[in-house]
Image (cartoon, rainbow, N blue to C red; front, side, top):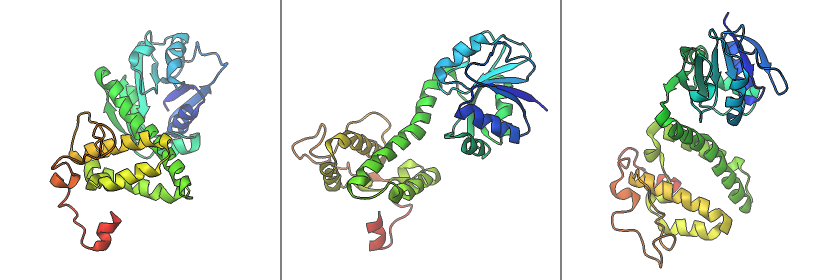
Length: 284
């Protein structure tokens, strides 16, 4: 049985350690704050540094290199240079939230994607968990990690705004969770552009303005950013743009959208699933 040791007893370290044990690895120990780590690479096939990103390099320097042991970290934002001095280096970044060890361990065994770099042991660890692997180059690492943060952190932050705005209407966040869950499912099934519904997708400018008027001033910038993203998506744009709601942003004084700017004007998804009743139209 192959063996592995961890430095870091946080959510990521405990989640991965538990999942690897289920997958048949021998987890020797999890070292934490205050434990000596100088000999941590000795006597194991792999050593995982599962500390916060800003501590990885410091911890790696404190570990005496062993040419037989692969030293890996879990930091999506970092490359292999932070493990300098260790002959065999690797990176394993799971693309899944790990809120606690129990849930995290379960999720890591469900076929999630791992970004891997360096020694082949990183890929072997992912494969033993039933995961998929992607290789990220140095040049693309920051874009990759930004996408990961948008996919998880920003979505959660948006749900925080949903919770605040829903409260002003006397409703809990739970009333809207299925709406978000199925929207994500639709984006996975048909792609974000074809999954987009709502007033921005329809070019319903009057509704968007009413939304802004109903929101507290502190909520409007976030909503405007969402409108901008939705309009760009509906128009198939890939470059930067500015909000285009009449009366708000760069177009002011009640000037409406330019001719042909409504999302439905050239919607490649329009023929995919046309509504067949007034009820279907209203549901959108």
